[in-house]
Image 1: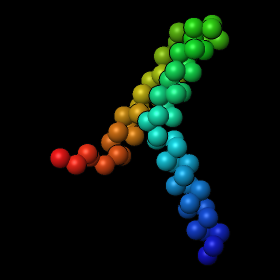
Image 2: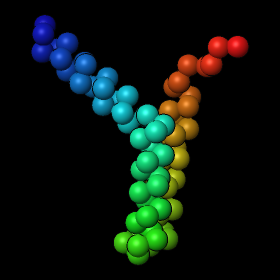
Image 3: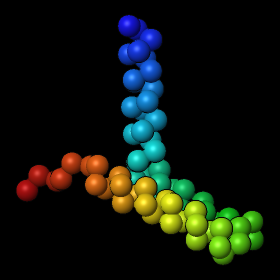
Length: 68
């Protein structure tokens, strides 16, 4: 019983971080730096950027609507 609770908590925290817009935006900045430093080519950058932008869009869908 306790192990199941712990696993659910770990999964919830991992999911929260995965869809945290601040984390995703930081990853986008890092990706840009990798491109500028020449450690990524344009095609790889585009592929990774698209995946991060998809995550950001999903994060926004998952977040509750602001009160108003």
